[in-house]
Image 1 (cartoon, rainbow, N blue to C red):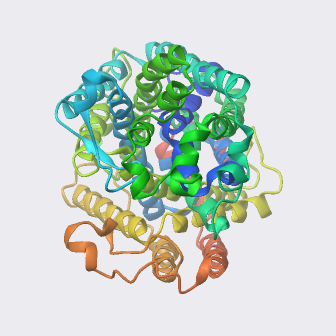
Image 2 (image 1 turned 180 degrees about the vertical axis):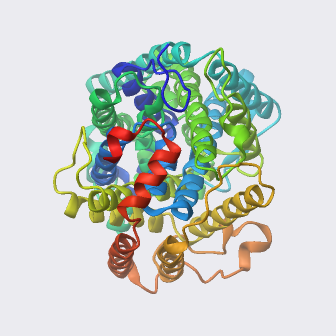
Length: 574
């Protein structure tokens, strides 16, 4: 049996790595993302997918280089540690874990929400027409169904990586085929070109169309395209990471981008023109009056199911209802795997108790990490009981995690320029800061309410890590490299200020929930305007990028951390 230095079983081939990323990309996003984007930007939502794809592709390039350079389990939680030291590793590692642990409940929520389109499951999800959009919550037996799905993710994860790969490959093949089938049927059989033009309100259907396009990114588009890094998280279990990792990462992004853009085109083209006319075009689809129309309510619960039903393609609607369980479940399954590997990586770095890295000697699976990841997922079902309410915060956490990759890749190019890089990104000097700016923009786009929620979640992570240090629950806990603290704190605080005066997410902090509704409710007040928000945040991102470069670890310290965390890395540190 071939093991990596972490004691995990190296059996994943190229298809396993590719499909691990692809099953994460094609999840609930294809079922709900097209509707959310259309509500904000109408046909112009297609441009939102293109913009997001550009940003995600550049971030994926950074991960492709790092994954080949250090093929370790839970890579996104470990690369910043190698480049900037323990405080940076703890910061980006917690952001990585936060997003991974919360994706499984998102996918479960999507599955239950789609199931609620069936008569026997109507009570599973309570739609709130007064709130409009995709508002609603789990209800009654919906909580029990969600819990059962999360428990199933645990069982599948405990049978071993080889069997998990086989299950994932079958599920992902289904997940790619079904949206492609829907695209072909809807575009070639039920396409209304007038939905893209004046008959439905125009391609750019409202004043401030550019802002509408930008708002689609955190509302579901970026979330839908995330997941390419799953191959990187599982690199410690890859049979030949040098050959396969970069190809798997970039291949998954290309497939996902093409599918999602075509899904958006198919959704807009297949929308019932009579329904659009009844509500006054795309601009009226999210109005309170439209929410009272039964077809709009069903559209919110199951967008493609209702689109297919209105088009009279009932057999496709039935398949899509099945896919609404299979597709999110496949993504939730792999994210449960990913979250457990991230906590494994955090433990190997010494930030959380050593129990997280205990391996079952029979299956070579970190059992405790899998169980805790599922428990965290269950907790997310309580305060965030709907798909829409979770997406923005998870998108921000995800992009914060991804922001560590261009910083780490650029820093390691400076501190370790002679390392063998199986895949080396061309134009790193331009692409790394550009990727960091792109990640920063997506965080800003999520708005004041979401960003403050993310900051509270980050503070909670620091508290948990401090408790782990205080209780001495991991003998490998490193001393903190505080030289990263100034630029990380400066980056976070700077974005808080920009977000407060920026153009997105007006209202109170922490989502404006309860007591917080009126706390600093002047945030997101658009004082900077859209152009000013983009410009100031880009400048601050560039300042922080080069600030971070000046605080990177020296070569000797990089060698020490790589040797300590990944003992077989001698070939990397010379």
